[in-house]
Length: 113
Image (cartoon, rainbow, N blue to C red; front, side, top):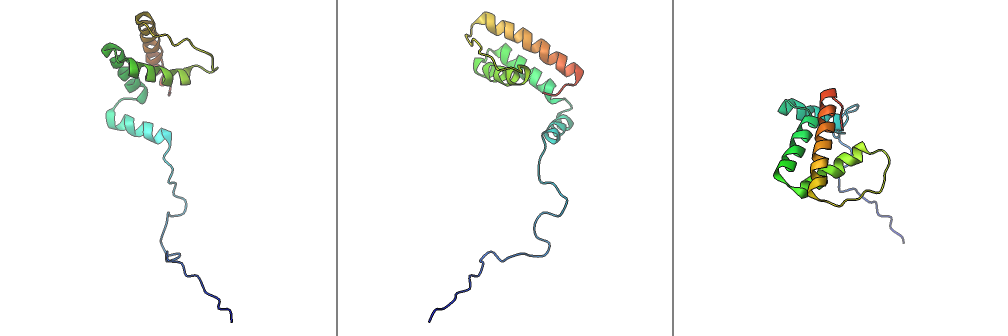
């Protein structure tokens, strides 16, 4: 004689009022993050990036400079090209001047990165 066992869920099933209310988004947008940063600090994210980058340059933090360079290049360079990443003092100074000018221009226009 075969017995049929009924599987009972141990999770309790559906409950009235449980879960996310209909129409409410649980997604956090990038714009919402940028807006909150600006509201909390009184400065745009671009302005903060400019200051942080120039501070790294002034301190000579080559590791962070390289990270910022990669971030900026991924946003600024539309076409991926092979780059010579030889680092020397002249190259760092040239990058400092170029990126500081570019970021300051973006901050003045209110362009988002």
